[in-house]
Each structure stands twice: as C-alpha cells, then as structure tokens.
Image 1 (cartoon, rainbow, N blue to C red):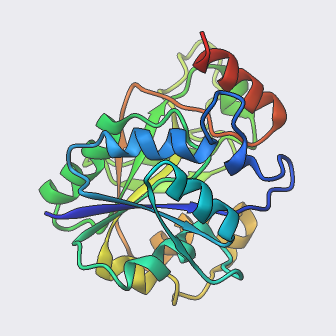
Image 2: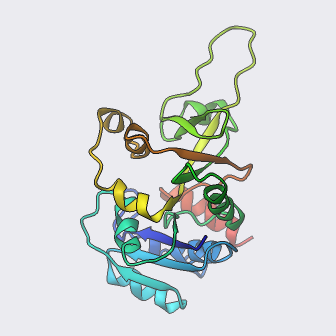
Length: 242
C-alpha cells in the first residue's frame, strides 16, 4: 500500500498566534512535525497543506514540500482532502501541524492497520490514560473500542464510566487526533452531513461513525502533547533544547 502524509497547517491560532512559525528551538514548529513524519518507513511523501504563503516559504526553506489550499476549510481533515484529490496514494495520513512529538513508528502502525483490516477505511491512535485528571478533562478526548479494536464511541466525557465502590477503574484510552484514511473514503467524508452527536461533542469522527464508517483504534504506549498554548510550547522548547 502506498501512503502519503499531509500536514494541515493554518497560520491563525486563537490561543497561540502563528504557532507554526515559532522557532525558539532553532527550527520552525512545523519543521519539527515534518521531520518526525519523514522518519516513517511506510510514508513515501510528506506535504504541508496551508492557507498562508509565509508557511509555504518556511517549509521550502528546510527543503520540505508545501502547497496552498483554500482558506475557508472548516477542519484540518477538509484541508487534507483538498490535497488528496491530486494524489494517487491509497492511504493518506493526517498529522496536525502542532504535533512535534509524534512518533514515526506510530504512523507506520496506522498504515499497517489499514493493510491488515480491509473492512476499515480509517485508523487512528489511542494511548492509555495516565491520570484521573486527564480522564476528567474535557479537553482530552476519550475512545472506547470493541474486541476487534474498532472504535465504538469518542467523547469529551469520562468513558467508560465507573462509580462503584471497591471496583478497580476500567482501562481508559485517550484519543490522539492522528488519522490514516483510505483515499476514497477521505474524499467522501467532507460531503457527509453533520449529525447532532457531532455538534454536541464537537468531534468530527462521530460523523464518520454515525454514517457507518469503521475506525480502527490503534493502541500505542507512546503519548505526545499537541501545542495549543504558550505553556505547551515552553514545555516543548525546554525538552527539545536539553
């Protein structure tokens, strides 16, 4: 199976303006992501999809490939789909431009998962929850999967619920918003109508489940924190320069 990765990357960001171009480590934030993705053995091509020429210029400065996309996309998935229309690869991997700690081995696991499970058109990453605080946080998306490893539901609430005294809590998994799609399915997703459950949870993957698409949840012990705030970026910089 041939696979390409597309990194959607907007210039604007409410909580951390122009974060893709931050370079306190000596490298642009988007460059850290690009280098991680380039390390995946199953991915032959890496493309940054952006809405601004400054990001195109930055990516080309470190010999990366970047393309301009329409400015009005509602989600990164829609931006990735625009680029995928011009690609011939069977699998398209979507890695957000603020994931500088993504592990290349996990991206390979996503492609491998679609190669093994021909009934699934989407694969995503999950990692064991590490604290009660993380489980309770609305900003942390949780996923529950069936015995075959296919996602049953995603939520911002704590799932599965446990409240019975004396019982050990069930193993809970955090969803990481990194996906591999079969190209044909990715092009279809943007045309699907949004159900109420997607709007309530503010999770686009619930639209895909609602319309019958199966999502393989690939469990990995590795975690990585996306860069959403100045505090996130400071933590990343401190770790990167040690």
